[in-house]
Image (cartoon, rainbow over all chains, first blue to last red; front, side, top):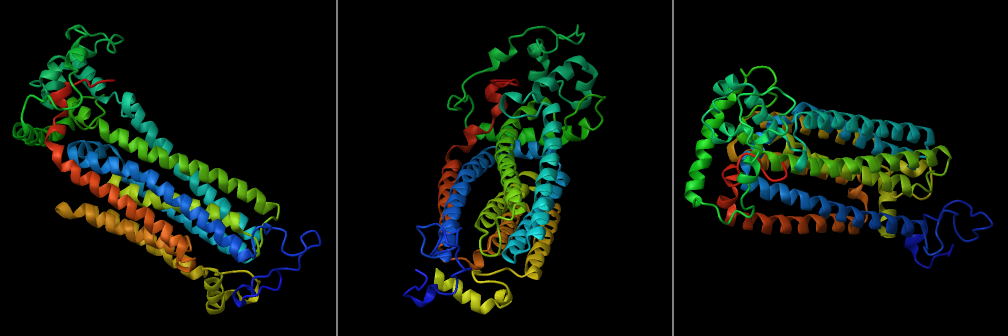
Amino acid sequence: MSEPPTTTKTPEQAPPPPPEHHQHPPYQAHHFDTMVQQVDAGKLGMWVFLATEILMFGGLFCAYAVWRANNFEAFDIGYAYLSWEYGAFNTLVLLASSFTMAWAVRAIQLNQQALCFTLMGLTLLGGVIFMGIKAIEYDTKFSAGMGPGIFYEAPERAVKYFAEHPEATEVAGVADSPEVADAGGTAETADAAPQDDASGEADGQAAASTNTNGTALPSGGEVAEQGIVERVERKTARHADLAEMPEGYYWKHPPEQLLQARPFFSIYFLMTGLHGIHVLIGMGLIGWIMLRVKQGEFNSEYNAPVDLVGLYWHLVDLVWIFLFPLLYLI
Amino acid sequence: MADHATTEHSTSGEEHHHGRYHPHVVPLPMLAGVFAALLALTVITVAVTLVDLGGLNLPVALLIAAVKASLVALYFMHLRWDSPFNAVALIAAFLFLALFLWFAIVDTDQYAPQMMPITEREGLVGPGG
């Protein structure tokens, strides 16, 4: 094996083999002919895994595309509540951490263990900062009642607000809205606050729930489209009014539009949540590799784990490169 | 694959002084240059959204993102010097993703009008809320 028959495999026969691994370096598995073959096999395996990761995120990107095409208004409303400054800062943090990760791989390939350790520490720090910003963003969303799915309470809380502040309905121009007139529908959540003027009919929710598949919509397509145009016009007017709302109204839209934005936040939390889980896993892997670097396990001859964890971290960066403009900017 | 690695070994020149097995070590100025380009593209993609291009905003943003992703894949992820099999895995994933998205979006146009008026359908308080 140390004398390969083909000329292509000669240059990588690495350091003098220790006695217990008489034919090859200790970090070369027995079932590989050469280190080149071992490294190439490992990298191909990692790339196949990354391909499945792309397809997994692809499902969510598909949900984004379909919902956005069907429900553009939801995205138009919802994205007003994302801070592009946070998103852009996190983009820079992830790009920088990708850079330090690529540099760390270079360092270990050049036998610079200490530099590699430092650079991976910086990469880990990037992950910490990213998740810190993400935590601030999530906290802001949840405290505004804009969580995913059942945690999306913004419309009910907005209705409750109007029930407690009748004067605000005038400012917001929602007094004519039948939904707000029925504001007592959320009386169960409004119990804590003194509230005499709004009626306590708690059946609004049940009465309003109809079909969910959309087939039995009373109006035809054209009528519905007309309704959209009207709503967009009304929204433009109200958006300006809401800036002068009394204290305590956190949102930039009236209740019925907050309800429309619900799918946006579900998609936002699913996409950024799955991405955040990947960041956390990547941080764990980087910490593990840092320990092994510290123990001197890797050098210029053997560094595949550093390389492969680097690939994973770059994929996390790659997904965010698409998430940032789609969620925060467009 | 080994053939490819050895070719790079002889052409890149950087790793002659240190060891035996290295397909390619990316030069630091190149990594820094790619990082600078990625930062610049991030600034551009934010700046472009301040300009209303109408329907073009989304394609432009996706195009910039694709360029950034290519830079990351080619240089940070080393794909430019890797075995082409790795690129095949990545490109195949994107092809299948494109196929998936394409069919889903084509179908979307067929039922869009009935999906839109969510407030009229469910009332103000939706299910589960």
